[in-house]
Length: 193
Image 1 (cartoon, rainbow, N blue to C red):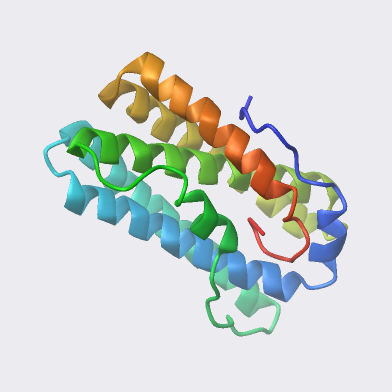
Image 2: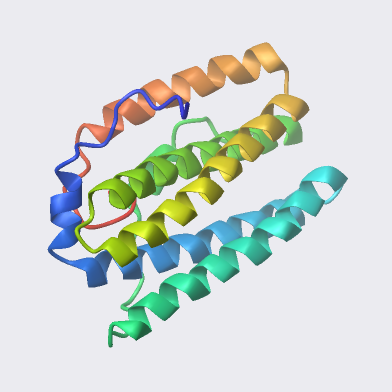
């Protein structure tokens, strides 16, 4: 369904379970960054009214997810740690060349967002199925549904605003690149790493 070419090694969940505090902190920042991405798309492409409307809704949803994750951290008696670089996102966003038309830039940003949401969805599914902490597993099952909707929304906008055949070709190439990148990841208690 998600189109990902290389699934996450299921042993990644074992890494996560050894440091739930770390994954929750990383997850909280991912939700913040997702809201920031939506705001950035509004600021950069205000003429795309339908996109702006959806991004406004997405900002609200992502910030509510941030609060939910932050509440989980507090419920467990922890304090959210500091942000750290997301090596996955840094590498992914180097794939397409910089520049090009505004439409090309928009399509590339939408494809990046779709991929990040797809990988998050896949990771949330793993957590929902394999975490021993059943309360946290259920929490991730609910979030997984949202991530799947975000993935399809971003990919749909990319196809709407770009040439469908070109967008599908770029999407396929991005998925192949991401699969190569994932071979070196899944070794840390982070949502993408």
